[in-house]
Image (cartoon, rainbow, N blue to C red):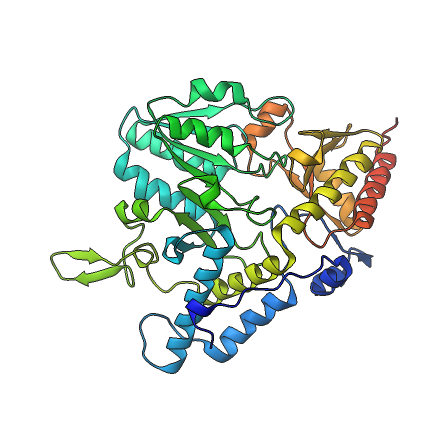
Length: 424
């Protein structure tokens, strides 16, 4: 087996969309009365390539054992694979030390870990936490809970009508009392790409830490935590070709070492007596109990796959697909698109409405054509309130989507419009 120190680098591959699609058997499915599946719900979860599926099978077939606790062959192998996955993830996001990678269940748990283990220890009544109006609920609710429990002050950066943030307000909102800025890198509801450099610079100027919700950015564009100069980064495996139930919190080592454990139990301890316990070193301190070993290994395989494509190429492809979608949907009678008007400043997400038709009706009719989109508030109700709509329809793209699938979406929307009597 390859040693952790000698992990091979994945060679760059040409971006061949036909070859990529062959790696995803589910894209060949027929759904809804025999219609060919057009999967455009990638902001919710991505599909998994055969390489990741095979790695899951291989782990449970050949290496299944608990880790860090055994000296027998299977346990040693499972431990090495788990730690190799940690090293792959660290390299993927530019972490300086694999020990800074904490495996969690998902982005939500990673953010809650920071709220529990850092904020509850270091924040006091009157300290400020700043979020934005375009956050996923997972980066709002934990801070509201902390506000109600500890009396911190929760502030937010407003959203402008085009779905971008009011950067002019950043200087006055992030103050000397701000201790943490918790900000998304990309809106899951609108696709807005947040100019983190502006926000990070202001946070650093007042001595505040920065937590980035990277659930939508890490799967879709190059991310380097050192270049970003942030303090925490949270993201989920299931949005980047890996299984459900595996996520990541990256944090600066000094911060992680200063924090209290998130949960108590096995593997996060150094010593236990009936009187007191002491904690293991990072990252074990934050990984209590038996971890999700198989899916962590599968996340490593997903990282290999994306690294082979090249994240610059992933971003380029999605920018082209999104640009085409923005132009194509703009020609559909009755469609109004929310958010920034160009693909340069948004990720592969297009939220829209069809005049006079509820988003859920749009989604159901499209499903009869095999087109899978997301409808609802997308766990971003403040965004919906700011837009003055109850919900939107959302198409979101990934590495395997094509312009032909965008055409299928547009044609389906035209049929929805005809069915509900929408006219130019």
